[in-house]
Length: 376
Image (cartoon, rainbow, N blue to C red; front, side, top):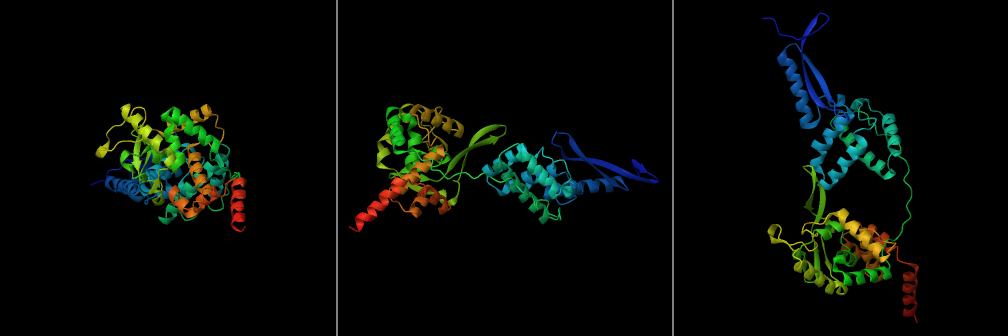
């Protein structure tokens, strides 16, 4: 019985089948043809290839376009191994800087160090050195995986040079004592500003503060055990509760006597206004939005910027500056570096040390003055 074929070249006849294996940056499909002596053989080759892509990028992966291979690795292989927030950052880097890069349309096996260097040089003209560095790190992780599964033999990242990062001077962004007094006065006049003062006196990260519930305040301590992050899911941004940034971020922070009356005033205000709502396990948000839900980071920062404009605060105009304020005041109060690191939730004590080194010359003079008094 003659075998069925649908493709002839020269004197030879084959059966040919086609499969879509991905999409180009412009959205057009990438198709691959498979040949066999029979339909069954051709379809078996097709199925082996596509199943190989799904299960680990092994079969013929090196022949796939770089951009398609990278996207598949990011979504199917790397995504389950990182935090959701980390994947969100990587997805953004891919979408903005990798998917339409000069190497995205090349076959994975054809990408050379020269190609990557040109890609990085081009990227450096479009974005910051910091973003170029983040893209480079992500590509290195991908290429390392390709080498591990034998999809690549040579490393196309070897020898690539990145634009030098501009050195940023180490500056202390903490609020001055005068600005802290302005912030306290503003809260006394309008308690809606209290969340910012709370950060300045507890050192919480923005996401940690916005995730706090009433149950997290107990015995004059703040139990930091979670954070809230907003990211896109099913086409819309939604709040997601995750563990804090690192294991060291899980901590208990005492509430300073200075802000206890204002904390009670804040609780009274949100309870009176009906903003305290029940969530899962009957927990209640301590710092809800105007609608009673989790506050979104951008809106939270915008409100702080407006407050800084109102109070004529020129330095320390970021939420993170409020954390620096807390850490700086710990240094001024003589709290040990180790204990400050624990209160800040820093995984690396060197991060705390950098902030501690920012105490003013007056603080240093005062400290030496105390030493002189000791030897009188």
